[in-house]
Amino acid sequence: MLFAEKKKTQFAHFLLLFAPRTLKMGDNSTGIVDGSKWSEILSFGPLITEVLVGIFLYINGLMIFTFFMKEAFRTDTRYILFAHMLFVDSSVMVTTNLAVLFMHYGVVIPFEVCIVLNLMMTWLDFCTPLTLVAMCLERYVAVCKPLRHAAISTPRIRVVGLLLIWGLGCVPALVIIFSCTASVSVKQLSMRVLCSMDALIVIEWQKYLQIAVFKFYFLLMSMVIAFTYVKVAAAARSASGDNSKSSAKGNTSEMSSC
Image 1 (cartoon, helix red, strand yellow):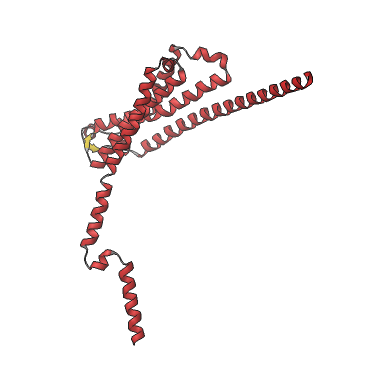
Image 2: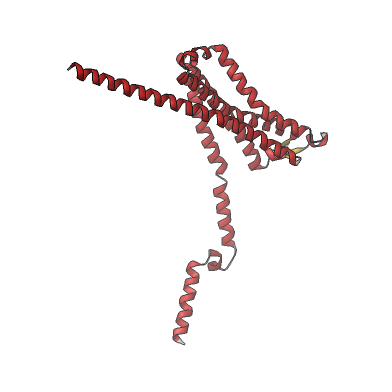
């Protein structure tokens, strides 16, 4: 009997050590306090996000300011494209951060404003990778076709390239917005909604159209980036091979002269 009572006492101590605090105290108030502590910790999430967004915007703004201060940067195509990508990335952060704050605090806005906000986010989202594609093409021409590089570094070609980036980036956004406005009624347009990309999807085929457009652009841009990468890597390898051959010939000539 004493052995059995001893075992029971040890088992009770084990439960007190490893059981949740609600079982230790014998009441649910502690569990509620723990949940409120977690909610207090999670409430700092938006503050941390705003701090990070502010830091990144400051860094991007500093680099853009440096770009405008140096004339050598303003006349070089690759630096112009880089500054353009910094501007687009900063705009993406601002608009996306605004949409996230609306979602987090449950702010409802008019449906027309939600359409405009999603139009801007989608437009900017596509301009960033398109700028990266333009940078890859510029480096491809500079490395693989250096004689033609001066012809594409004129102010007119730069303006045309930037307009092409914004024009191609606008197409997916307009497709999504037009498909939404064609599917909703006038009454729905006057409603206030919790804005997100899903709020624009009224019919199932809109989702498939959006996926198809996104995949087409992703495939096209991936092919261009892969092509330029392979060509630049091959040119760099052949250049390094030529340099090694020329250095070997120089060493042979030196040895023969000796």
